[in-house]
Length: 207
Length: 224
Image (cartoon, rainbow over all chains, first blue to last red; front, side, top):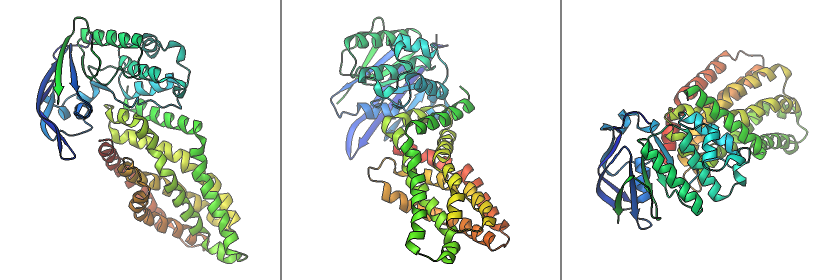
């Protein structure tokens, strides 16, 4: 369990302008513990920009965000957050195990040990292999293993199902349901249909 | 994990990466050696001239080698998304950036110190000033890495940032160059060099404490 269940992420009338083009404006939502927020929209509708705003990489052009009803900078937000973006964030010259060790050093130890997390994403036989030798789908599973072994409440996932096979997609969906059942929350973008059992999925359409 | 674990994990990671990408270590060092060995060939049989400009040659080459190596500081982390993960860490980004700069200096700056005495003898520098040359390199090259880090952090998001990078950092390198090569020259003439060394030490202290903050801030802007 992730402690008390009163985590919440609130966005109040966010807007994002890129190159004089309004991607979205007056966007408000609340994500509570155990919930999933699925962002939908065409390519270029600002899904990734919104995720990067949630990660603090970008400032929203208007509006604000709060974590457990505190401003992001005053809260434990950045230690409660894990992000998997388009880029895997792993070094291809390091082995699978070395990559996860660095990730662990940067974060806090979570429910799973490195070996357990690798077993969970079916990479247990690859721990001493260089990441450069892994396939795209395996790399993706490796970056998702990072989510399991560090302690975090909010997962921000940008197209997590890219280059995964059907088995991999089912696996990630199971992991996501488990995370929510433990009181975690997830914000993700996906073009795929989600099938999460017993999880409250909110949908936000960006257009 | 604690901050010190993260700090040393980053240093260790970057050293292992450098070991697996050896050209990154070899390039600046090779450049340093090549430039210095070309000077005697270009100047010809004038040992006295060579001897008197040796401190300048070595320091200018060290400075250019440091600048050549700068781009590798954040480039690969920026390209593969590791930089995002480092900046998302709950630990202060400025200290993690400092760890990266230290690892980078160990890989690109420290080897210069090892070959410099050999090259100095090759240029006919008096042995009495070898110690001072090493000392100025030891104090000065970390300053070059730390100041350079600010410039790279600002330009890593640009596709062709090389030219802007040199324009940004070269003026800031000049004071180090002046005081360091002057100290070596004075030492060769048997004059006191305490003042120059004190200034270099103060540069180093200021750079260690002040450079990581703007570097971290600039990186946050670059990954935007």
